Length: 472
Ligand code: AMP
Ligand code: MG
Image 1 (cartoon, rainbow, N blue to C red):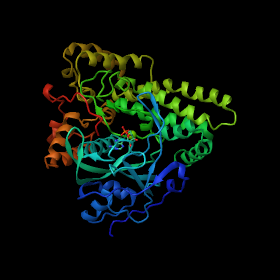
Image 2: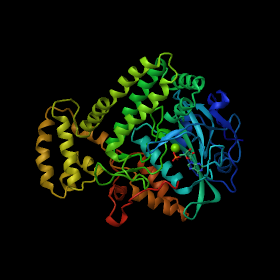
Image 3: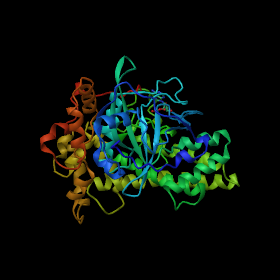
Image 4: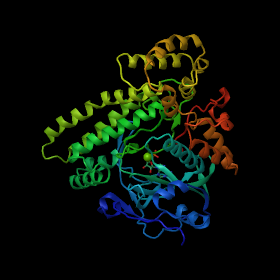
C-alpha cells in the first residue's frame, strides 16, 4: 500500500450504544473519479495510485488503522420526530488530526447497507455524489464552515431510483458527524449515561472552553448563528434542515436538495418534498432556533436540577433570534461595502432586498454589481434601484474602501443549480469535463475569471431547475 491515512480514532472507543461496527460493503468495479489533493495534504494523507485509492474510497479495502462503524442518531424530519435514523448508507472509517491541529472524520457515503438502513439500499448515485463534491467544496472556498469532499468513486454498479442510475461513493470529511439528533436519540431513550458521555465528548472535541451541557448549548448556538447568517449572505438554501442534518460543530452538512438562489425571493424553496416551505430561504434562521430548542430539550435531561436547567436553556435559546439578526445585518452591511454600524442600516438592507424581490433581480449578480456600478441593470425597473442607491451612496461616505470590501463579500461565482444539473447529465454520459471545470472555477469564487463568464449567467427560463429531489 502506498496510500497512507494516519488514523487516530476516538469515536470507535465510545461504548457500543453509540454505533455499530461493520465494514463498508464492497462494490463491483471501483473507479476513482476525483481526489482532492489540497484537502489530502491538510489531512496528512499521502495519495497512492488511482487503482488503490479507488479500492479504499470505494469501500473494497479497509485501510490500516481504520475502525469502520455506522453511527447511531435520531432526528426531527420536517418537524416530526423519528426515533431511529443513524448512518443508513455511510461508514465512518476513522479520524485524522490535520496539519492545522483539527481532528476530522473520514466517512464513506453510499457505502452499502447498515443496521440503520431501514428500507434503503445503502447506496448513492453519481448525481448527488458529484453535487455534494462541487457544492461543499464551493462552500469551503466561499469561507463558510462545511464538510468537505476528499474523493468520489464510481462503483460500476447500478442504483435503482426512478430508473437505473450509475452508483458512486463520496468520501466526506467533517469536523465530526455529531448532530442535534445524536443527542436526541439518547435523551428520548432516557439513556442519561450515554447522554452525559456524548456531552463530554462533544465539549472535548469541539468546544473545550464550554462548561457543562449549558455551555455546550451556548457554543452550538453561536456556531449555528455564524453558519446560518453566512448561508443567508450567499443566497444558500440548505433544503433539509432536519435536526439530524444540524451539526454540533456548526458546519454545513448533508447536501441533498440544496441550492443557491438565482432570482431573489425570500420564499424560495428547492426541495420537492418541502410543500409547506418549512425550509424556505428566509425561514432558515427560524428553523435554526427551532433546532437549537430541540438540542436544549435533549441536553436538559442529564441535569441534576432540570428545572433550573429549563430556565437557563430557555434564556440561551431565546437570545438566538437577536444574535441571528445582528450577524445577518453585519454580513449584509459588508455586502454593501459598510464597516461601521448605524441606525437605519436594517432599513437600508431590507429596502434593497424588497426592491430586488419586486424586480426579479439575480441575488449573486446584483450584489456583485454593486461594486462595479452596474447593479441597476439587474432590476426590471432600474429606477427602483436608483431611488434606493441615493441613500446607499450617502451612507458610504467616510467608509475606507467599500469596493474592496464588496469584492471580498460578494462572490462572482456560485454553483448555480442549472450548471450542476448540466454537469451531472454530462457525467452520466461519461464526460467529466464540466465537473472539473466547476470545481476549478468555484475554488476562486471572489475572483473575476472572464474566460468563465458564462458560469455567472443566471439560467434562461427553460434552464431553471424548479426542485432538487430527495431521491439521492
Ligand atoms: P438524509 O435525508 O440524507 O439526511 O437521510 C436521512 C436518513 O435516511 C439517514 O439515516 C440516512 O442514512 C438514511 N438514508 C438516506 N438514503 C438512504 C439509502 N439509500 N439507503 C439507506 N439509508 C438511507
Ligand atoms: Mg442526513
